Each structure stands twice: as C-alpha cells, then as structure tokens.
Image 1 (tube, rainbow, N blue to C red):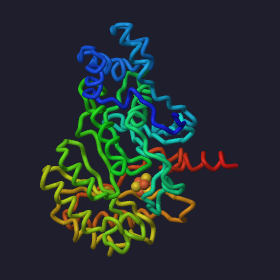
Image 2 (tube, helix red, strand yellow):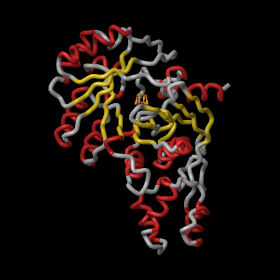
Image 3 (tube, protein in one colour):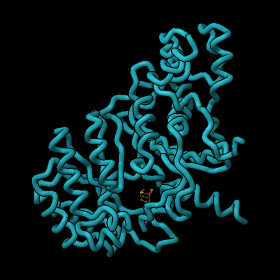
Image 4 (cartoon, rainbow, N blue to C red):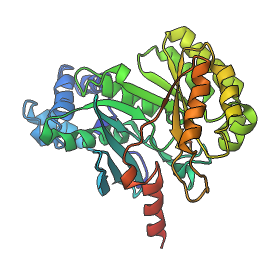
Length: 354
Ligand code: SF4
C-alpha cells in the first residue's frame, strides 16, 4: 500500500533521457520527450491536458503515470533589495525554503535538497530538527520552476542556481545530479553550467564522484575553520571527513578539472574570526586555485553566536589577500526580511508544534 511519505512519480523527476526510455516502453516516439520538456520548462504549464501537440492517448498515459509537484506557498517574504524568501509546503506536510535573489548580473535561485539536515553545523538553523527526508529531484526542480513563474510576468529569467539551501546535496547525490541534468538541458530551462554552484560541507567520497562527472558546474566547500580541532567543533561532519582529507579532495578536483574551487567561510565573532585563524587558513590555501567567500554569520538565537565587527572582517580579508588568496566578503541580501537559512522553517515548525 502506498504511504503518504512514499515518493510519487513526479514528472519533474524525469531527465530527458529517462523520459525517452519511458516513451520507448510505451511504444511512443522518443521525439515526444523534447516536446514534453518544452511544455514543462519553456511554456511552464502544470497540466498534461494543456500539452496540445501531443496525441490525447499519450496525454492520458502521462496523467496515469505521473503527477506534478505541488509546492504550496506557505510564506513569501519580499525584501526591499528584491530578494524573495519562500516557505513551501510539500505533499507530505513538510516545509522547505527557497530563495530568489536579484543581482545586477541576473536572478539567482538558492534551492534546498533535503528537509532539514543531519550535518549539524553549529551556526545553522536548518539542522536544529535533524534530517526528515531527502527531496527527490522533482521537488528540487519545482523550486526553480516556481521562482521562474514568479519572474515570468516581467519577462525575466532565472540565470543562475546555487545549491546552498537546507540540506547536504552530496548526501542526496543522485537526486541532486538528476536535478542538475534537468536544469542544464538545452530543451529545458537551459541554465549555463558555469552559472550553477553546488555547495557541500565536505562529503569526501561524493567530492571525488562529482569530480569524475566532469561538468562545468562550480563546486563550493563550506570550510569555516583553518584546522581540524576548530572545524570539528563547528561542523561535526569534520570527524567523519577530516580537514586534510577535504583539502586533498579539493586539490584533486582542481587538478582534474582545472576549475577554481570556492571556500565558504562563515565568520563567527570571537570563534573563528581572529587574525591567527586567517593566517592559518592562508597557509593552507596559498597557491591553490581557489576563492574564499567570507560570510558574516547571521545571528542564530538558538546558538548565541555574535557577528564579527566590520573592521575585523576586513582584517581577515587583508591577511588572506597578503598571501595571494582571492577573497570576497559576501554581500548580504534580504537582510530586512531577516530569517537566515532555515529560520523560516524553524519558526513554522515551532508554531505548528504549539
Ligand atoms: S550549513 Fe548546510 S550542511 Fe551545515 S547543517 Fe546547515 S544545511 Fe546542513
């Protein structure tokens, strides 16, 4: 018997190649797959009956085998700078966050890959209730489609994607890769590979696997500390995959792909933001084809972390730059709508528990 939490056969789960295989099984011509992709991702309809260039019999088969992901918009917060934070409800009652950001170079969507997260980074609200379940590829795809639909009236498009929302994408590897295949396909939304970034907390075996995929997609590592001791305190995952192994996997990625890697470093006041931390990090990264993104940490009330003073952020950056390590300080977006990653959902869970 089908349970409520059982993944449904969502049409958005289907890569173009898998759709072709399904069509073959159904004794239908494979060129229909591109037509279906066009309806899904170019015309962005959400009803098989509207696919008017398909024969009625095929539309009936599609309705019988597949359904659309419905993301119920529980909350939508719009910032003065154009950032929109969504809290979406899923079919099984879970809620996830998605963020649409407006940059001067285009619109970017930050997607979630898991309901909650089990990685346990101490500065992150997404992990407070642990991992509930993996999202399937279709549920990740639907977040981008929904954001794109919001842009449609103004004729704008989603031009980049960051996989940096709740969850560890490399612990939901297959769904994440299917999602990426659907996003970059020229018959679909056709997002440029170089405009997509996958961010991981350093799941070393998946980093090697991702390197072998040989894509143009960017890889970012949440590093957040310059050594094992501090990193294990901030990110328990470091006990599973120690600092040196993560750095070795990064070097392998750079060597194999020739691509630059990004390190995300959340600065937490008085914890990992001192000049000696910057020096130690610079020693590790000097000479590597990399870029460091410094992120002044958002206040997470549950953890009692304070922000690094502005001057200290600049000093941290100066030290890295002195060692020729490329560094930027992440521009904050959507600050007036508060809610660091995971906090909208945390609030929602709290009020549901009352
Ligand atoms: S920062 Fe990312 S990997 Fe770490 S707990 Fe939060 S969602 Fe999970």
